Length: 208
Image (cartoon, rainbow, N blue to C red; front, side):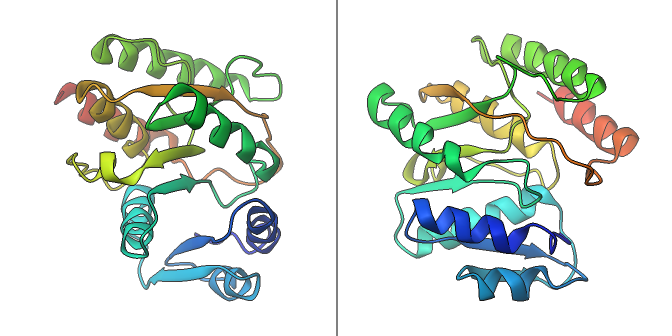
């Protein structure tokens, strides 16, 4: 939502690595959708914002309908580098994992301290539920096998979807792998609302 400052460049960089890009415009009030389409993306728009989880599910569904077996997700705000994409592809090929997640925590220099601490806590908590080590549960840079995803029930509509997806894959005994990625933080405003989204995450967690 409202990523006009970064979306055109990101789409162009992604299309240098991959044959296609799908952008879910979640109710933007700026030129995000137009710029993404101008850069060559397949743009699907929500007229009203539905949340990150709803946008991701729409993107995965769109990719599946187009016949893709895999989907790689990236945030639109420039915090993920397209130059890291080959690492995801290599990891999936060599490890046999059906979910490959970016790991910023191996070298988190540049990540704001509060986010670093929150991520470590959430990852530790979720790892205990999953029964395996999950070093970076909040990273949205992921490569996912769509046939595996189609067997799961994913319901959340906001930021907690990253946790829900990991736990669902772990409990289904699907292989998960992590690959180191760059840590990029600029002056952009975070879309996360600290109080509301943290409360929503804990409410989701308590129901597990």
